[in-house]
Length: 147
Image (cartoon, one colour):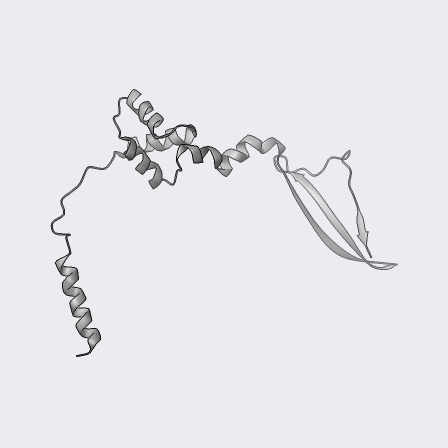
């Protein structure tokens, strides 16, 4: 027998001694899925509402849910507490609010062989995301060449 074999057997005995899986009883019943969905919906639609405010809204609808239960439901769904929810706007919400004014911009260079030799052109363009249209004719366009 090697020391590793003895230690493995010892660890197994200790693990069996402290294994409490047979003594466990069922705990508190879980929150109904429809109530949990309502909590998540309230939090998403009202980013300034904290646990207590959501609890009050649920109570007004006839559901008695503890504050810590609301906290656990929101944590399970990856939703931050109210003060942080206000500062971390989801992309979907941000895009919906600012879609009219959003634009994408990009630039690149291209080498062009001309009669005067190789010329590098820098291209910069802007596109409105909502319409996918480029810059309007009245907007200034700058052309830069580097030799």
